Length: 180
Image 1 (cartoon, rainbow, N blue to C red):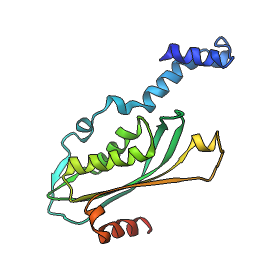
Image 2 (image 1 turned 60 degrees about the vertical axis):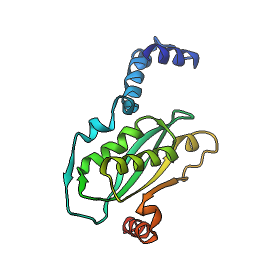
Image 3 (image 1 turned 135 degrees about the horizontal axis):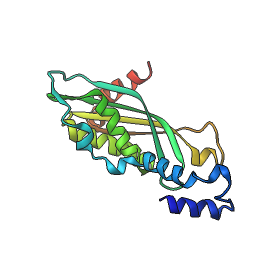
């Protein structure tokens, strides 16, 4: 990847011998490896059997999970918050594991619509929940830094599965908890 970054920088007309750029291909390669580390992670690895027996059948909400991803169309960042809710059926997921699942998928080249669905489907599969709701709100640098250059635009996506899709009251409870 380092060699490719060197070629990209040179194709911009820059001089790789310039003091500020001497190590940039190496740093850029390292940065992009970090930003896309989700490709080298698996859900099983990050969950690490952190499912715990529970009699709870009430909604669990984890909100404002910071997330950073790269738009697959321009490889520019989109940054925002992810809100996850689920209704357990005999087991709960370790709290940090919810955020780790968000990161596994966010740290890949991605579009927000797919990211939202991947997180919801994974939480549903891992927990065997009665239902799952995921909402992501993010700002996209591909829309802010280039193209239409709209600085205050924000995109919101949702994925509702199980009882969050079939039961209006469940969906409304989730949405009302986020508005507090």
